[in-house]
Image 1 (cartoon, rainbow, N blue to C red):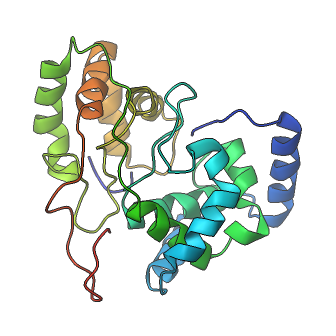
Image 2: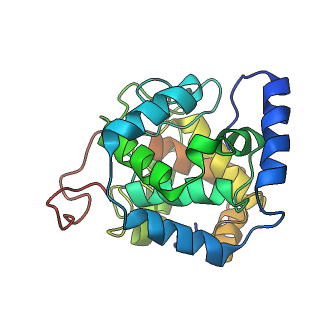
Length: 241
């Protein structure tokens, strides 16, 4: 799966619409991938302040993703704890610049406190530092062997054999994630519902049968815990790309 690779939560629709209206007036009318890339690189070169990121997360993100970023399988909200920093920054930039669709997330990032690259890198640093989820939703287990075969043959070249993502951190970790979210995102990608991803990835997922998508999601949902060689060390000796 190649590099250019929503969740919804139960909040009042009036708040969503109000936030979306504010977003419409404050944000660009169309997505600009080049601007997104520039903003991401700006964010990644800033100093990280995870304590500040924790405060921003608690105020703006925890009501949906949970106080420890463990997500919600029932509401199909992803676990974010331990996710790659660069990937998190990229997604926040995509939501802000309309490169990724989600009315709920658009309303969230439209808030003044979450529209700057410094906000993104601080939140990403905080979320990345959290222990990954352990009590995760899985599928029924019937297609795990098939899912493993598909993933290892077709997906591991980008996501690595243990689903940790790439060294640069832009390919997401697929470990420690809820089955329902993995399946919904796979189905959404296959239906061309996300335009911040590589077209070859979309075509490949679209070629899979429903039971194959289910099998891969079930297999991935059983990948648990940290990995020892997740990424390269930063210049300051820390890890967590």
